[in-house]
Image 1 (tube, helix red, strand yellow):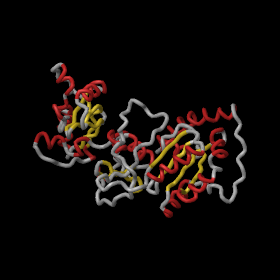
Image 2 (cartoon, rainbow, N blue to C red):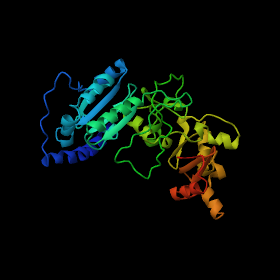
Image 3 (cartoon, rainbow, N blue to C red):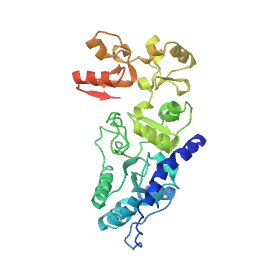
Length: 355
C-alpha cells in the first residue's frame, strides 16, 4: 500500500494538474442554490456505499473539481433537469467527490479526466463509467442504461460483472472481448471455497506476493470465485481477467504431463512464465517445471504450443506465446504475435475466442 500511495503522488498531480490549468482559460459559472427537489448529493464515499447497500440501490459517484469548467456546466445544464433529479431520487444514492481529495479512489476506477460519472452496485461492482461532459439527454440515457444492467440474466449465464464500459483512453489494440465473460451483475453467490486458497490473483501475478483477498472484493469468473486485496486489484482484474487467472484451469501441468494425473495446483508453488500464472502441486513439481518451462507450459495447448498458422502456411515449427492465444471449438492455440493470430482467424473464423 505504501508503494501504491507513492505512485499516487506521482501520477495524480499530473492527471489533475492539467485539468486545473483549464481554469485559467474558462471561469466556472456559479452553481445555483439548492432547492428542495435538487439532487441530494452525499459527500462521503463510505457512508454513501453503506446507504446504497441498506437501500439496495445503485451508487452514483460524480467526480468533480472546482477548477473544472465542464463540471460546472453539468451542474447547470444536467443536474437541474427534473428527469435527472427524479432518477437520482428514485434509483440512486448519489455522492459527489472532489477528485484531488479522493485521488486514490479515482485512480482505482481508472479515471484520467473530469467530470467523471461512475455507477456502482451495492456489492461494489462497476456497471458504468463515463469521463467527460454529459448533457441532459446523454446523462439521462447513461443513468437509464445503468439501471437496466441490474436486470437478471438467463440462468445459463451466471456471471457477475458488467462488460467493461468504454473509457476514452482505452487501448484500441486490445481485443474488444477481453471482458466478454462478464454479464449484468447479480448478488454474489455464497461459495464455501475461493480459488487460489483465497489469495488475490492480481497481487500474485503483478507483485509476486501472497496476499489474502477480502470478502467484500469478490468476483466469479468462468465459474470460479476470486477475492482481491483491495479496490485497485479488483479493478485491474476487471479490465483484463485472463492476465491473472491461472493457466490450465489451475491444475498442475507437471502432474498432468509426467504422471497423467489431474491434481489441483497450489498458489504457494506458482510459476510465472511468459506473463502467465501456472500452479504446481508441490515444491518438487515446481522445480521440475522450472527446468523445462516451455514443455510444461504447453500442456493442454493444441499443436504442443506451436503456431498453427505457421504450420499450415510454411510447415515451420514456431513456438507460440500464451499472451497471444485463441480458443476455437474447445481447443486452445498459441501464436507468436497478433498478426499470426489474426491471419489464422481470417482462414478459420468460426467459434473462436481471443485471449
